[in-house]
Image (tube, rainbow, N blue to C red):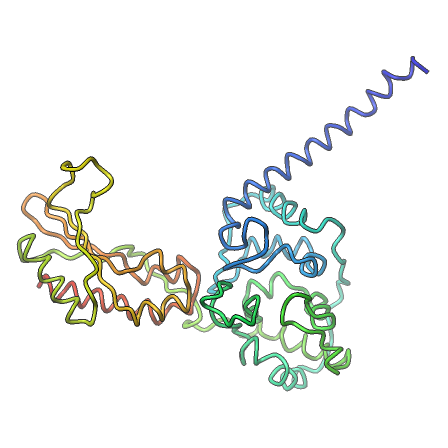
Length: 352
């Protein structure tokens, strides 16, 4: 048998190369997942701001195309961003890594569209679906973080009228979810709730009809190119700082602290004395914002920077309206507008 060993090795070498390529794709997918996805979906895939991707019932109910389309399209205005800059190979690598939590073949859905009675589906939706998914399919409130969602819900009900969801979910996928439910979530089997298969078909047709009604303007992230609010001050450096503190207090804010902008970033004594940052907070507003999206804590308490250069004093603040687009969360829109108006009011009072 000895003469055949070299031939056997030659035959196995290509297979080893294929295995190595697959492992490389999985490693690439893990690196991309940690870079782009883990902050929301958790390093173990068990969720947080994003849905728990590692749930077996989720894994075996979604297709690779559903995952790929979701990564590409995201969920406009619903926290999940669109990753348009990733290559097709990157997207497939991420999907491969997501699949490693539940190895096996996901269910393959028929491609035929579902037929049913849209008007009857509308009635069924109002009774069975609207309490969780919203009367117009807008989805549940908050994010996946427990501080911003009811604690008896492990995940936030998705928005069914979202163009990202409708592009990713086929009729048969929606039907299967309604028929089987989603173990580990509040989504129950509608068959077990007493609905017939025809009732479920009617529901699917109604949900698909959301495609005929694009998201209204108020359900889209605020579009603004202005990243910062900038004002020239008519006063000297210290007077501007004092004016800002007075204006903040006059708008029901508490001054937290004032410090040099470079404090902690350069050796003591080398920080620029003409660059100060003022922190202030309205705790009622803070709690409202955190209850909608805890990620806004990255930008709170509120802060304004005062800089003097060549005898000219400028005041800078982040534009709160950028947060809606940054976090892709339309629930923040009202608070972003409110906070922007407050910043402008405080700075104008202090500088004009």
